[in-house]
Length: 178
Image 1 (spheres, rainbow, N blue to C red):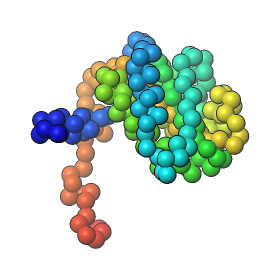
Image 2 (cartoon, rainbow, N blue to C red; image 1 turned 120 degrees about the horizontal axis):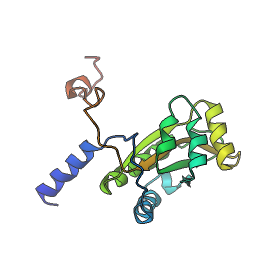
Image 3 (cartoon, helix red, strand yellow; image 1 turned 60 degrees about the horizontal axis):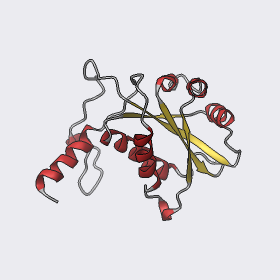
Image 4 (tube, helix red, strand yellow; image 1 turned 135 degrees about the horizontal axis):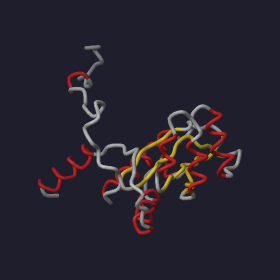
């Protein structure tokens, strides 16, 4: 891999951000299919692929999902919401794998010039609402979803967009608390 390509890839990863506001433009079937293929090829523990996905485009269903918590309202306006369903009744049993596929969705969306944002459904009452709304069986779990669309350009940088310096985050050899 050439240096320019490596640099471009690293910059691509650094630029990845959550999108929570979208235009009215729909996500094309071709772009959605590309993202679904990336999801299908995402690695998981022991290649268990402990997930299934519910792709929600229906406005009434998105509106119902948006009522799950005080923080989920923004997904009603997203053109697509992909709900991640995992095996078993314990929502966090596959948290690592769920995180991997969520991040892959965000990166695939970015590669297609789309925006994406992760939403979580907690507490259990929110999970129950999602399961009931989408007909997810009791022996399956739902904890998060990823909303997709064409992002509204930000008016200004978010105050949360900055990052702590590495010396506040990284410890060498031992956690020394500094």
